[in-house]
Each structure stands twice: as C-alpha cells, then as structure tokens.
Amino acid sequence: GLSKRSFVCRMWRSCVALCLFASSAFAQQDRGTAYEALRVVGTQFHRAALARIISVTGLDGDPQPARWNVLVADRGAPGGVRELVVENGAIIANRTPKGTVVGSTRGATIKTSQLNLDSSGAFQVASYTADKSHQNFDLVTYALRTNDRGNPTWIVTVQNQSRAPLGTIHINADKGNVTRVEGMYHGADMAHVEQDPVENRRPDRVERRIPEPDDQYTGEESGDVVSSDEVDERDGDENIVKAQIKRMFRQTKRGAQQIFERARRNFDDFISHRG
Image (spheres, rainbow, N blue to C red):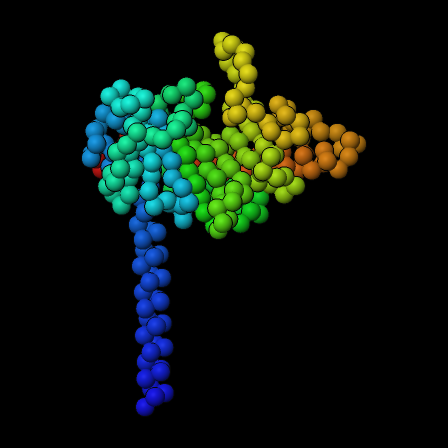
C-alpha cells in the first residue's frame, strides 16, 4: 500500500545518500599527495623538470587537495616560469603563471634529495600541532618551497569551513622540525609568531639585510624572540602567557619530530622505486 511505497522511497533515498557519502569519502582518500603530483610532472611533462621545481601548492585540502599547482623554472616559458596543474593523476593545465610568482626565495629551486616529507606527513605534523594548541580545523592549504637558507619548507595553513585561516605551521621538509608557528596557541592570535631561533639564525658569512617576512616575529615585540627563561613573571600576566606559549612551542617541536621520523619519506627514493 501507500505506507509500503513510502518506506521504500525513504530507504532508496537513504541508500543514495550513503552511496554519495561513500563516493565522496573515497574521492578524498584517493586524492594524490605532493610527491605523486610531482611524479606526474616527471612522467607526463619531463623528468628533468623535477630538478627545477620552484614551489608546489595545494588549496583547501581535506586532508589532501583536489589539485596541485607546480611552478617549474623554464627558460623557454614566458617570464622563465611554467605552471603545471595536476589533478586525478594527470596534468590538466600547462600555462604561464598569472601575476607575480610567489615561490622560493630569490627563485631558488628545491633540491629533491633534501625532500624527506610528503604532504601526507606534513599534514600529520600540522594536525598534531593544531591538536596541541586545541585548535579545531576543517581544511588545510599547503605550500612547499625553499626558505631564504635554501631549505625545503612546508608552509601549512589550517582553515575553518569558510576557508578563514586559523594558524600556519612551517616545517623543515628535510629534517622535519617545526621552525615557525603562527597564531596557534591559546592566548595568541594570527599576528603572533613563534619560531625556532636556531633555524633562523644567520651564518656569519651572510651580510646583514632587512629581514624578509619569513624571518620576522610579527607579535607585539616585532623582531624579538623571547625564551621562557628570559621572561620575568613580575612584568605581569602578558609575559606569563608568552612564557606558556614558548613552552608549548618547544613541546610541539619535540612531538612533531617523532611524527616526522615515522612519516619520513625521501622523494628521490620515492621516484626511483615507483617512477
């Protein structure tokens, strides 16, 4: 009768919804990592391009993005840079980047022999950092490039469902250490930055210059990195909060290093075994 048909319709709608959810979840799980996108570049564009990678970026990952944008130094391209867009295991666009190229410092390319952390591992480190700071998030945006010292660096920004940034974690993709955290800890906002003073220390032979954005502490005391040992609690609650943030940053670095040791994956080995 009517009630039976209504029951069948409800069951059918439930099955359709479940199938759609399952297919969506499978599609997200099937999204390729940055390493896999670079392998596509090497096989479908040119193997030599892997020695000229400027940056790899992916937006709104859940946890991996639907597509990766790869910038390659190419003397034959207008402006000397080519942009390759990889999605579902294929290059879907080969074009000149629009506007100013935001990539590695001074156009430096990534030494793939020093690349030991895939985007899946970068997500694990970033997720751990967010968890330690009690920061929930929905989406992740990735950028892999070199810093001003030439080290390959993952810059991972966690976002809410509206794509608003909640915090950013900088991870050395060679050694796996967290070098900089922006706006993640309780008592801090997106303007507050913690960074590893050792990682950002300048070699003696490097000339003094105006710091680039990656070098700067953009909290209230711009340019200053204060350790908990240097904080005088008599100066008030503000310094106590800063000391707590410093302590959390050090704890995060230790835990993230352990995650890196488990997730470590050298890119050149990945390519040679599966390329």
